[in-house]
Amino acid sequence: MRRTPSSWRRAPTGSRESRTLADPDTLAGLAEDDAAEDGPLRRCLVTRARLPRETMLRFVAPPEALASDALVFDAAATLPGRGLWLSARRDVIDKAVKANAFSRAAGRRLVAPSGLAEIVASTLEQRIAERLGLARRAGQAVCGFEKAKEKIAAGQCALLVEASDGSLAEQERLVQRRETRVVRPLDAARLGAVFGRERSVHVAIGPGRLAVQIEADSVRLAGVTDTEPAALRLQPPQGAGREKTDRGGRQI
Image (cartoon, rainbow, N blue to C red; front, top):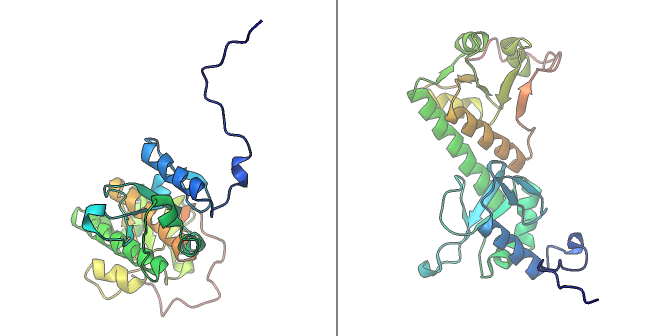
């Protein structure tokens, strides 16, 4: 009895996990996966993990018509072209540059700018500041201890943005054990500039797309800068920062 040939494509032999980053076919395949993928996940060129696209970093090659080989960081993930995706981690960015992963995946020469991780971090910081400004102008953001406290108590705070150099003890007094989403992406001077002040430590943002974007960018920034990850649904640690004074009192 003759066996009817199967119409299914035969799977490749060998363990896919055994392939290494240095394998050009593997990297090209990852980029092809991205070009054809319509879902919410993307594959990291270095770790090969599939993660939600909003948690990752997207890079693109400029159109060949521009005769440029400069790699571009696409912070908003909206530029045309094939996406080259990385996990939002400093070590992953460094490995991708060292292994020439962008050129291998794109199938053409791409030059990553010097200090790529620092460029990514600076871009994300600027993006966060711009969205905080939009939230302020839209009436969705307030700054200062008392105003933020009122917004949290009223259940109108979708995201609490704390200065990265602010006191954890002061943050604890503000949150008062309420379940609150907290991020600490910018220092007090940078936050203050958004609100026309010399310094600002506490910013409460109401529900909406801007709060979601600021949170996502803050989480990515924390990974790239190797800082403490943004705290999601944080209940502040007991006694955090009590051993230090609060810069002369309550911060705003």
